[in-house]
Length: 311
Ligand code: PMP
Image (tube, rainbow, N blue to C red; front, side):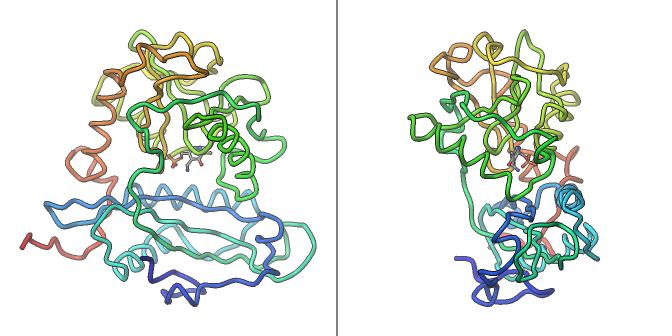
């Protein structure tokens, strides 16, 4: 159970972390958020936060899209997060949710002349998508928001109505996950995850200019696939029907981790089973996030001060 939040500049009991119904962001969606994971390593009795500074850099960039003015640096936000996690004392995998919001209690849609505030809370979290080894996806009838309307590169609260429309349509139609096309008709991403496709041993992913979130997991996978698996990774537009003939496809994100796609629009992806490239990347990813790959240890921030020895 969550007991604390970072709110109004300090770690406080979660019951005190409340905002008014008149809060600007609650009325207009004029905020942004982040999503980080803490991974529990039971052998080391340590909780590792994955790419904490990179997440907070993107968080502040999302804020920049919203004309946010904050005095916090990524390092400040990371320090608050570690303090929060130490207070919670999670000894299991968890998810961390920072939110930047326009705190004024006022009516009038705009981004300027409003006070910006940050709150952070965390919850225990295992899987976000249950069928990680083989999810059934459909291409949504909803299109991804365009950079000319609401920028997809940032995690803007209002734009998650777009994600929610797609996700609910998919789940209510019996699928696990939605894939969305951008306004040009090319694949963008999942409802809350980036997309990769494997064809003839090459990894493809839509470029950021396809209206996708600048995903931290996406970035990590591109690097690990090149450096460890020696794969070619190409960022280019992907058509819907390329998924129908792909050998493998998967979604990735802080929540989704690496979720293999078993089928798209009722067509099996490859043979419909977890493919070798996706499996290799998943195995690597889970070693990395739990601190078992020295090469990427710098992506992790330990939460607890000293490594506590197992009892
Ligand atoms: N796209 C969208 C729309 C998302 O909400 C997320 C989850 N943050 C992602 C992609 C994956 O991003 P990340 O790897 O940074 O979590």
